[in-house]
Image (cartoon, rainbow, N blue to C red):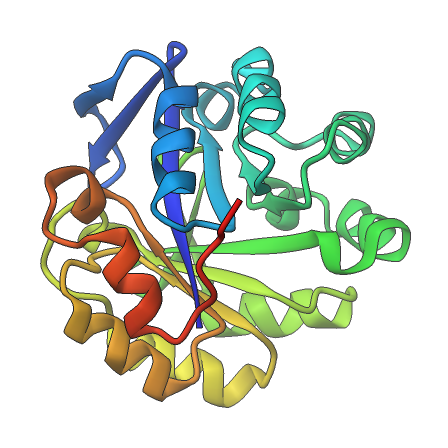
Length: 243
């Protein structure tokens, strides 16, 4: 199981939110590039990078910072936040992003998602951002009545082959992942599911691995020191990046 450190960018800084609330943020580093290099030094191969300003406004706002991370870290980047135009998505993939994370447009424009899957294949990942079992959009600021599992099944018909599941109410709380929902998605979808939200102990990673999660995204627990990235990668049987 891959361990993927999270870097959330707001106003050019590395921050963490509590339950996706933009009013409850903690700045962990003024320079996200420094954070990327730190996670690389501890063995990370992938980074989960979210442009929070982009997610809220509908278009990327921290592209320069993302480009700096790509150049400095030589890591595989999955990027989300405001990626709602085909040209923007194509440009970011050309700049070196390995996977694009789509959320809002998957609800609002499924035809575009289908076209993107046809053009970019496995580089397209859909975010299943859930609040009480229903999808949330626009940077987690808008709730819907769309059931998470049904939404994922519909997305698979469009060509989507990988998902990131986040329980918003657990994100940034250092509690525990929503194991029941993750298990249900893995069992029902039978495609790679990346788990996110609430991971705060190595034990959580063991359970996610046993459930068959493709990867686990760790955010706040790395920044607070509750989880050591190097230990987490070893615990999950992943490969340490020696670069």
